[in-house]
Image 1 (cartoon, rainbow, N blue to C red):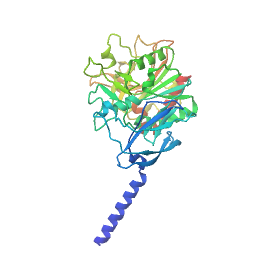
Image 2 (cartoon, rainbow, N blue to C red):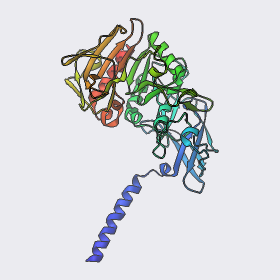
Image 3 (spheres, rainbow, N blue to C red):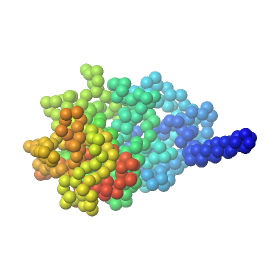
Image 4 (cartoon, one colour):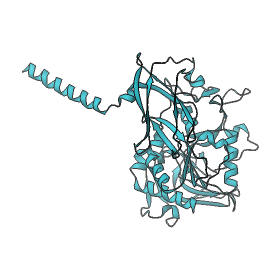
Length: 405
């Protein structure tokens, strides 16, 4: 009897082990580190891919480049070996891998965020003017990504290298299928966040996910774009919060100046001349235990096809304009805004006694400037929200259509 029980246990264990192994991607297991030499590329450019394995032996492998539909768009064979991590502080100095493989992006590649071996981002951008430009938060993702439970923020580092392993973020994973949909229906360009330092030439910019740290050039470029009539869709909790500086040659971010001992918010850096071009901040929004927005303007084009009076989803931190609560209803009364619409809302608070708000907002500074639509939070992008909620998908499509009309 005991032999039979041991045999049953062995069979169960073997079955579980087989199930686990069958779901593993051994390329993911073998490649321990992988990053590229720049944050984005044009078709025809050469990408330097730095990769290492934990194994002590060199092995041959197939590198696959896929889109968000998991379709293989390119692949090549290479050899990967164990490489020592040369720097002492990898957050500030990068991994400093010596060996790399060169990969030429095909000339006919469409713009997009592609995945190297299903995990690591490769941003390919256009040289021609698109309808939509989607900003992949490359630098911000690196800053927020931890190594050994430490981040650039937790260690208060002055310098942060972009040359280290940072897998695709959960917000991009949640929005991936929608991005592919936009590519199919509009001329769509993908850039990295630090590409915003260059002139923005598009009809609509979509900013999503982690978007806290902005350089002066990025901020100035976005301000000019909005002033000239360019529209922005915000799906983020932190936008234009902290100032930083980007070195494209060294691929690093300076978090604060020599005269400082810590990073600063844009407001604290230059409070006399501070100007928020997007009109929303987490300090006016905050946190909320209520998992929904109440529909306020049912006839608004952004809510076309939405029959529910409540939009349900799970969120954490919200970014919003400043409002005044008049009883149970909020209003935006600002002399700095030509147009301010609350499409859907609920209460939120950054501090315990704050009377903040969360929701969907349409803001416009003057009659000739671009419109800004804020959907309130980066958590809107998560798979458990976006992929599982047809209302959220429809509202996002409507917002894009509204800003492109």
